[in-house]
Image 1: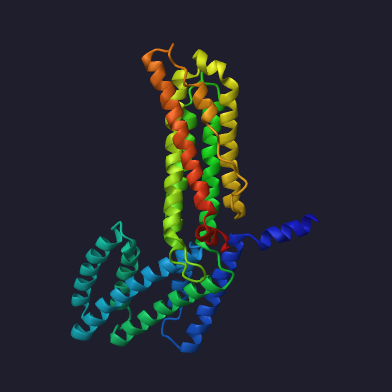
Image 2 (image 1 turned 60 degrees about the vertical axis):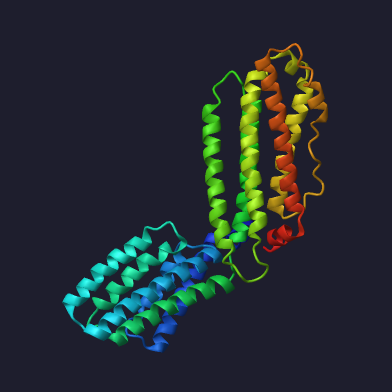
Length: 358
Protein backbone atom coordinates (compact mmCIF):
# COMPACT_ATOMS: atom_id res chain seq x y z
CA UNK A 1 0.00 0.00 0.00
CA UNK A 2 2.81 2.40 0.91
CA UNK A 3 4.59 1.58 -2.35
CA UNK A 4 1.43 2.31 -4.36
CA UNK A 5 0.95 5.59 -2.50
CA UNK A 6 4.56 6.56 -3.16
CA UNK A 7 4.24 5.72 -6.85
CA UNK A 8 0.99 7.70 -7.07
CA UNK A 9 2.64 10.73 -5.42
CA UNK A 10 5.59 10.52 -7.80
CA UNK A 11 3.28 10.21 -10.82
CA UNK A 12 1.47 13.38 -9.75
CA UNK A 13 4.58 15.32 -8.77
CA UNK A 14 4.60 18.37 -11.05
CA UNK A 15 8.32 19.00 -10.63
CA UNK A 16 9.10 15.45 -11.71
CA UNK A 17 6.70 15.69 -14.66
CA UNK A 18 8.26 18.99 -15.71
CA UNK A 19 11.79 17.57 -15.42
CA UNK A 20 10.87 14.63 -17.65
CA UNK A 21 9.21 17.01 -20.14
CA UNK A 22 12.37 19.13 -20.23
CA UNK A 23 14.48 16.03 -20.94
CA UNK A 24 12.05 14.99 -23.70
CA UNK A 25 12.18 18.47 -25.27
CA UNK A 26 16.00 18.38 -25.24
CA UNK A 27 15.96 14.95 -26.91
CA UNK A 28 13.57 16.19 -29.60
CA UNK A 29 15.80 19.24 -30.12
CA UNK A 30 18.88 17.08 -30.56
CA UNK A 31 17.17 14.74 -33.06
CA UNK A 32 15.74 17.69 -35.02
CA UNK A 33 19.13 19.43 -35.12
CA UNK A 34 20.89 16.24 -36.29
CA UNK A 35 18.44 15.74 -39.17
CA UNK A 36 18.49 19.39 -40.25
CA UNK A 37 22.33 19.45 -40.33
CA UNK A 38 22.79 22.86 -38.72
CA UNK A 39 26.38 23.94 -38.04
CA UNK A 40 25.79 24.56 -34.33
CA UNK A 41 23.50 21.77 -33.13
CA UNK A 42 24.00 22.53 -29.41
CA UNK A 43 22.28 25.92 -29.74
CA UNK A 44 18.91 24.30 -30.39
CA UNK A 45 19.27 22.09 -27.30
CA UNK A 46 20.63 24.95 -25.16
CA UNK A 47 17.75 27.24 -26.15
CA UNK A 48 15.17 24.55 -25.38
CA UNK A 49 16.80 23.93 -22.01
CA UNK A 50 16.97 27.64 -21.11
CA UNK A 51 13.31 28.25 -22.04
CA UNK A 52 11.90 25.22 -20.23
CA UNK A 53 14.23 24.54 -17.33
CA UNK A 54 12.90 27.01 -14.74
CA UNK A 55 9.43 27.55 -16.24
CA UNK A 56 7.06 24.92 -14.92
CA UNK A 57 3.69 26.02 -16.31
CA UNK A 58 2.50 26.50 -19.88
CA UNK A 59 1.82 30.22 -19.54
CA UNK A 60 5.31 31.04 -18.29
CA UNK A 61 6.94 28.95 -21.05
CA UNK A 62 4.84 30.66 -23.74
CA UNK A 63 5.62 34.07 -22.26
CA UNK A 64 9.32 33.26 -22.06
CA UNK A 65 9.29 31.74 -25.56
CA UNK A 66 7.75 34.81 -27.15
CA UNK A 67 10.19 37.16 -25.40
CA UNK A 68 13.18 35.04 -26.38
CA UNK A 69 11.97 34.84 -29.97
CA UNK A 70 11.61 38.62 -30.05
CA UNK A 71 15.14 39.03 -28.64
CA UNK A 72 16.55 36.50 -31.11
CA UNK A 73 14.84 38.18 -34.05
CA UNK A 74 16.08 41.65 -33.07
CA UNK A 75 19.62 40.45 -32.33
CA UNK A 76 19.77 38.50 -35.60
CA UNK A 77 18.64 41.55 -37.59
CA UNK A 78 21.38 43.63 -35.92
CA UNK A 79 23.97 41.03 -36.90
CA UNK A 80 22.72 40.22 -40.41
CA UNK A 81 22.52 43.90 -41.40
CA UNK A 82 26.07 44.45 -40.07
CA UNK A 83 27.47 41.43 -41.92
CA UNK A 84 25.61 42.30 -45.11
CA UNK A 85 27.01 45.85 -45.30
CA UNK A 86 30.41 45.53 -43.61
CA UNK A 87 31.28 41.84 -43.81
CA UNK A 88 33.47 40.19 -41.20
CA UNK A 89 35.16 43.39 -40.02
CA UNK A 90 36.24 42.94 -36.40
CA UNK A 91 36.36 46.69 -35.72
CA UNK A 92 32.83 47.30 -37.04
CA UNK A 93 31.59 44.15 -35.29
CA UNK A 94 33.00 45.38 -31.97
CA UNK A 95 31.30 48.76 -32.38
CA UNK A 96 27.97 47.04 -33.18
CA UNK A 97 28.31 44.73 -30.16
CA UNK A 98 28.89 47.78 -27.90
CA UNK A 99 25.86 49.56 -29.36
CA UNK A 100 23.80 46.36 -29.02
CA UNK A 101 24.92 45.96 -25.39
CA UNK A 102 23.71 49.49 -24.58
CA UNK A 103 20.44 49.05 -26.49
CA UNK A 104 19.54 45.61 -25.14
CA UNK A 105 20.65 46.41 -21.57
CA UNK A 106 18.29 49.38 -21.64
CA UNK A 107 15.47 47.04 -22.72
CA UNK A 108 16.42 44.34 -20.19
CA UNK A 109 16.20 46.77 -17.25
CA UNK A 110 12.71 47.95 -18.24
CA UNK A 111 9.71 47.08 -16.07
CA UNK A 112 7.70 46.17 -19.18
CA UNK A 113 6.91 42.59 -20.17
CA UNK A 114 9.26 42.75 -23.17
CA UNK A 115 12.28 43.30 -20.89
CA UNK A 116 13.13 39.58 -21.03
CA UNK A 117 13.90 39.91 -24.74
CA UNK A 118 16.83 42.21 -23.99
CA UNK A 119 19.27 39.63 -22.64
CA UNK A 120 18.86 37.14 -25.49
CA UNK A 121 19.02 39.94 -28.06
CA UNK A 122 22.46 40.97 -26.79
CA UNK A 123 23.63 37.34 -26.54
CA UNK A 124 22.48 36.64 -30.12
CA UNK A 125 24.51 39.59 -31.47
CA UNK A 126 27.65 38.38 -29.67
CA UNK A 127 27.15 34.74 -30.78
CA UNK A 128 26.82 35.72 -34.45
CA UNK A 129 29.33 38.55 -34.83
CA UNK A 130 32.06 37.02 -32.65
CA UNK A 131 31.62 33.51 -34.03
CA UNK A 132 34.10 31.68 -36.26
CA UNK A 133 34.07 33.27 -39.76
CA UNK A 134 30.65 34.90 -39.40
CA UNK A 135 28.61 35.79 -42.48
CA UNK A 136 24.97 36.42 -43.38
CA UNK A 137 24.30 32.69 -43.70
CA UNK A 138 25.66 32.17 -40.17
CA UNK A 139 23.31 34.84 -38.86
CA UNK A 140 20.30 33.24 -40.52
CA UNK A 141 21.24 29.78 -39.21
CA UNK A 142 21.67 31.06 -35.63
CA UNK A 143 18.24 32.65 -35.85
CA UNK A 144 16.68 29.43 -37.15
CA UNK A 145 18.46 27.30 -34.55
CA UNK A 146 17.37 29.40 -31.59
CA UNK A 147 13.84 29.83 -32.98
CA UNK A 148 13.51 26.06 -33.45
CA UNK A 149 14.62 25.47 -29.85
CA UNK A 150 12.03 27.98 -28.63
CA UNK A 151 9.29 26.34 -30.74
CA UNK A 152 10.09 22.84 -29.45
CA UNK A 153 9.99 24.07 -25.83
CA UNK A 154 6.62 25.75 -26.35
CA UNK A 155 5.05 22.75 -28.11
CA UNK A 156 6.24 20.18 -25.54
CA UNK A 157 5.11 22.40 -22.65
CA UNK A 158 1.67 22.91 -24.21
CA UNK A 159 0.84 19.41 -25.40
CA UNK A 160 2.79 16.91 -23.26
CA UNK A 161 1.15 16.60 -19.81
CA UNK A 162 0.59 20.38 -19.64
CA UNK A 163 0.93 22.09 -16.27
CA UNK A 164 -1.21 25.22 -16.32
CA UNK A 165 -0.77 28.57 -14.60
CA UNK A 166 -4.54 28.56 -13.98
CA UNK A 167 -4.09 25.55 -11.71
CA UNK A 168 -1.31 27.23 -9.74
CA UNK A 169 -3.37 30.42 -9.51
CA UNK A 170 -6.33 28.53 -8.05
CA UNK A 171 -4.09 26.87 -5.45
CA UNK A 172 -2.49 30.20 -4.59
CA UNK A 173 -5.87 31.86 -4.10
CA UNK A 174 -7.02 29.06 -1.79
CA UNK A 175 -3.76 29.30 0.18
CA UNK A 176 -4.10 33.10 0.44
CA UNK A 177 -7.63 32.83 1.87
CA UNK A 178 -6.28 30.32 4.41
CA UNK A 179 -3.54 32.77 5.39
CA UNK A 180 -6.16 35.50 5.82
CA UNK A 181 -8.11 33.09 8.03
CA UNK A 182 -4.96 32.44 10.08
CA UNK A 183 -4.42 36.20 10.41
CA UNK A 184 -7.98 36.64 11.68
CA UNK A 185 -7.63 33.83 14.22
CA UNK A 186 -4.31 35.14 15.49
CA UNK A 187 -5.63 38.66 15.89
CA UNK A 188 -8.96 37.94 17.56
CA UNK A 189 -8.20 34.74 19.46
CA UNK A 190 -4.68 35.42 20.72
CA UNK A 191 -4.08 37.22 23.99
CA UNK A 192 -4.75 40.90 23.45
CA UNK A 193 -2.42 41.74 26.32
CA UNK A 194 0.51 40.47 24.27
CA UNK A 195 2.17 42.26 21.39
CA UNK A 196 0.51 41.20 18.12
CA UNK A 197 2.82 43.24 15.92
CA UNK A 198 5.02 40.28 14.99
CA UNK A 199 1.96 38.13 14.22
CA UNK A 200 0.49 40.76 11.92
CA UNK A 201 3.89 41.47 10.37
CA UNK A 202 4.74 37.86 9.49
CA UNK A 203 1.31 36.90 8.20
CA UNK A 204 0.84 40.18 6.37
CA UNK A 205 4.18 39.70 4.61
CA UNK A 206 3.19 36.17 3.53
CA UNK A 207 -0.19 37.41 2.28
CA UNK A 208 1.41 40.26 0.30
CA UNK A 209 3.79 37.78 -1.35
CA UNK A 210 0.82 35.55 -2.22
CA UNK A 211 -1.07 38.47 -3.79
CA UNK A 212 1.99 39.42 -5.86
CA UNK A 213 2.32 35.80 -6.99
CA UNK A 214 -1.36 35.79 -8.00
CA UNK A 215 -0.75 38.75 -10.31
CA UNK A 216 2.24 36.99 -11.87
CA UNK A 217 0.30 33.75 -12.38
CA UNK A 218 -2.66 35.66 -13.83
CA UNK A 219 -0.36 37.22 -16.42
CA UNK A 220 0.92 33.76 -17.35
CA UNK A 221 -2.60 32.29 -17.38
CA UNK A 222 -3.64 34.86 -19.98
CA UNK A 223 -1.01 33.41 -22.34
CA UNK A 224 -2.64 29.98 -22.20
CA UNK A 225 -4.93 30.22 -25.22
CA UNK A 226 -5.92 26.57 -25.58
CA UNK A 227 -9.22 25.53 -24.02
CA UNK A 228 -11.41 28.00 -22.14
CA UNK A 229 -9.90 31.48 -22.03
CA UNK A 230 -8.81 32.84 -18.67
CA UNK A 231 -11.24 35.52 -17.47
CA UNK A 232 -9.01 38.33 -16.23
CA UNK A 233 -11.97 40.53 -15.16
CA UNK A 234 -13.27 38.02 -12.62
CA UNK A 235 -9.78 37.39 -11.33
CA UNK A 236 -9.18 41.13 -10.79
CA UNK A 237 -12.47 41.38 -8.91
CA UNK A 238 -11.57 38.46 -6.64
CA UNK A 239 -8.07 39.88 -6.06
CA UNK A 240 -9.61 43.24 -5.10
CA UNK A 241 -11.93 41.44 -2.66
CA UNK A 242 -8.98 39.66 -1.06
CA UNK A 243 -7.20 42.99 -0.50
CA UNK A 244 -10.34 44.60 0.89
CA UNK A 245 -10.94 41.66 3.24
CA UNK A 246 -7.42 42.07 4.64
CA UNK A 247 -7.90 45.83 5.13
CA UNK A 248 -11.26 45.30 6.84
CA UNK A 249 -9.81 42.72 9.24
CA UNK A 250 -6.85 44.92 10.21
CA UNK A 251 -8.94 48.07 10.77
CA UNK A 252 -11.55 46.03 12.64
CA UNK A 253 -8.78 44.75 14.91
CA UNK A 254 -7.51 48.27 15.60
CA UNK A 255 -11.04 49.21 16.74
CA UNK A 256 -11.33 45.94 18.69
CA UNK A 257 -8.13 46.69 20.64
CA UNK A 258 -9.70 49.89 21.99
CA UNK A 259 -13.07 48.38 22.89
CA UNK A 260 -12.71 44.75 23.98
CA UNK A 261 -12.47 45.66 27.69
CA UNK A 262 -15.65 47.78 27.68
CA UNK A 263 -18.70 46.49 29.53
CA UNK A 264 -20.83 46.50 26.39
CA UNK A 265 -18.38 44.14 24.70
CA UNK A 266 -18.20 41.87 27.76
CA UNK A 267 -22.01 41.67 27.90
CA UNK A 268 -22.16 40.62 24.25
CA UNK A 269 -19.22 38.21 24.37
CA UNK A 270 -21.29 35.25 23.15
CA UNK A 271 -22.55 37.22 20.15
CA UNK A 272 -19.02 38.39 19.36
CA UNK A 273 -17.60 34.87 19.66
CA UNK A 274 -20.35 33.59 17.37
CA UNK A 275 -19.58 36.36 14.87
CA UNK A 276 -15.83 35.57 14.85
CA UNK A 277 -16.60 31.87 14.49
CA UNK A 278 -18.84 32.53 11.47
CA UNK A 279 -16.18 34.67 9.79
CA UNK A 280 -13.52 31.98 10.28
CA UNK A 281 -15.85 29.27 8.96
CA UNK A 282 -16.75 31.39 5.94
CA UNK A 283 -13.10 31.97 5.07
CA UNK A 284 -12.40 28.24 5.49
CA UNK A 285 -15.34 27.32 3.23
CA UNK A 286 -14.34 29.84 0.55
CA UNK A 287 -10.80 28.43 0.53
CA UNK A 288 -12.17 24.89 0.25
CA UNK A 289 -14.46 25.86 -2.65
CA UNK A 290 -11.55 27.38 -4.58
CA UNK A 291 -9.27 24.44 -3.81
CA UNK A 292 -11.87 21.77 -4.65
CA UNK A 293 -13.31 23.71 -7.63
CA UNK A 294 -16.87 23.75 -6.28
CA UNK A 295 -19.56 26.44 -6.22
CA UNK A 296 -20.13 27.92 -2.71
CA UNK A 297 -23.90 27.49 -2.75
CA UNK A 298 -23.85 25.92 0.72
CA UNK A 299 -22.09 28.85 2.43
CA UNK A 300 -24.43 31.12 4.38
CA UNK A 301 -23.80 34.83 4.63
CA UNK A 302 -22.62 36.01 8.06
CA UNK A 303 -25.45 37.70 9.96
CA UNK A 304 -24.39 40.85 11.80
CA UNK A 305 -27.85 42.32 12.49
CA UNK A 306 -28.13 40.99 16.07
CA UNK A 307 -24.58 42.03 16.94
CA UNK A 308 -25.11 45.48 15.42
CA UNK A 309 -28.31 46.00 17.45
CA UNK A 310 -26.63 44.82 20.64
CA UNK A 311 -23.69 47.20 20.18
CA UNK A 312 -25.93 50.12 19.22
CA UNK A 313 -26.71 50.97 22.86
CA UNK A 314 -23.69 53.23 23.41
CA UNK A 315 -25.30 56.14 25.29
CA UNK A 316 -23.23 55.54 28.44
CA UNK A 317 -19.92 55.53 26.56
CA UNK A 318 -17.41 58.30 26.10
CA UNK A 319 -17.34 59.85 22.57
CA UNK A 320 -14.02 58.18 21.72
CA UNK A 321 -15.28 54.79 22.92
CA UNK A 322 -18.47 55.21 20.90
CA UNK A 323 -16.44 56.05 17.79
CA UNK A 324 -14.34 52.90 18.29
CA UNK A 325 -17.48 50.74 18.63
CA UNK A 326 -18.95 52.32 15.49
CA UNK A 327 -15.65 51.74 13.65
CA UNK A 328 -15.64 48.08 14.69
CA UNK A 329 -19.22 47.57 13.44
CA UNK A 330 -18.54 49.50 10.22
CA UNK A 331 -15.42 47.41 9.42
CA UNK A 332 -17.32 44.22 10.24
CA UNK A 333 -20.07 45.20 7.78
CA UNK A 334 -17.48 45.94 5.08
CA UNK A 335 -15.80 42.58 5.77
CA UNK A 336 -19.10 40.71 5.37
CA UNK A 337 -19.91 42.61 2.17
CA UNK A 338 -16.52 41.69 0.68
CA UNK A 339 -16.93 38.04 1.70
CA UNK A 340 -20.35 38.00 0.04
CA UNK A 341 -18.91 39.56 -3.09
CA UNK A 342 -16.13 37.00 -3.43
CA UNK A 343 -18.71 34.22 -2.95
CA UNK A 344 -20.82 35.73 -5.74
CA UNK A 345 -17.76 35.80 -7.98
CA UNK A 346 -17.14 32.11 -7.25
CA UNK A 347 -20.77 31.34 -8.06
CA UNK A 348 -20.45 33.03 -11.44
CA UNK A 349 -20.56 30.50 -14.31
CA UNK A 350 -17.75 32.15 -16.27
CA UNK A 351 -15.42 32.15 -13.29
CA UNK A 352 -16.28 28.53 -12.49
CA UNK A 353 -15.37 27.51 -16.06
CA UNK A 354 -11.94 29.02 -15.44
CA UNK A 355 -11.57 27.19 -12.11
CA UNK A 356 -12.82 23.85 -13.41
CA UNK A 357 -10.74 23.87 -16.55
CA UNK A 358 -8.00 21.90 -14.77
